[in-house]
Length: 335
Image 1: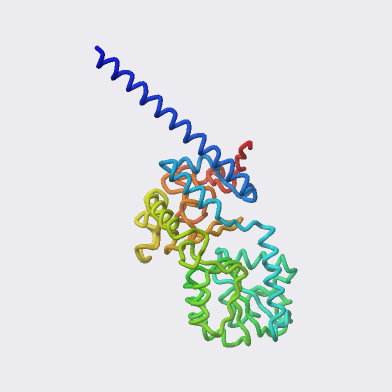
Image 2: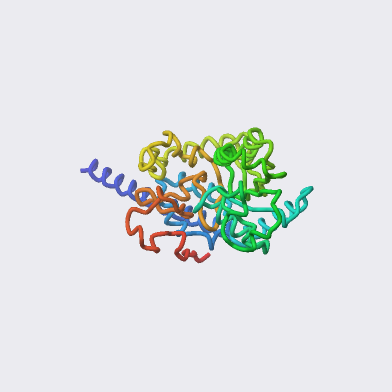
């Protein structure tokens, strides 16, 4: 009987200790969330989901702390900053030798992609006439872009500016410039201007296409680059293990793009598309190069900055705007 009583006391004690640990973890998480919201108040109006909902998807207190640590260093470029950056980029362009604004045409790489949006915001932020904007397939003959009468009376352009929002490895830009090498020869100057660019991606483009001047307003490095001092090397290793642990829940290579079998395996990575390791997002969308724990909706994962793309579509109520977390009002905690 004594043994039975001792055993019961031990069970009661273990349950009590477990409960104490659970309460302590909840209090610690609450404190970390409050600290996050105080330190990153700038993110509030960009958040698409309650941070508590997002962070509780991670399995342990340690994983939750690592998720919040990464979120603290995520940069989201809002609309106001975006327009300011585009104005500064325009000032830089006008200061380049030989550039005359009435002989400049602006373009972007593809229809329906973010470059076209940058092109629009650049034009409206700098009060340019839309006839100075052309689709990329018209760079060989800018005056044939459409039938607007003003276009026919504009000076023959001698400067081409290709606009973009983000350069990772630089592969898209290199491919497009290679395809249009002949058309580029009609211009005295070709600029490729982007809001954000990885240092190595910019160098890749310049090495392959020295005829193109590449300008990025923000020059960044990959998160785990040895020269990136955001985190110490031991913390980087810990974060890499954490991201690899959750890849199967947010961005598994086998499932994320089944409709395009021509893509090479391995493009979906725990660190983002082609292991992008980006910590950048924009008010209108999040880059696929950015860590997928932030933007994925795979198998019901709740993102804080959803990426809108054909392969990252919510499985349920996919036509219901409420399911697109980026469009819903954020839930603000009382601190």
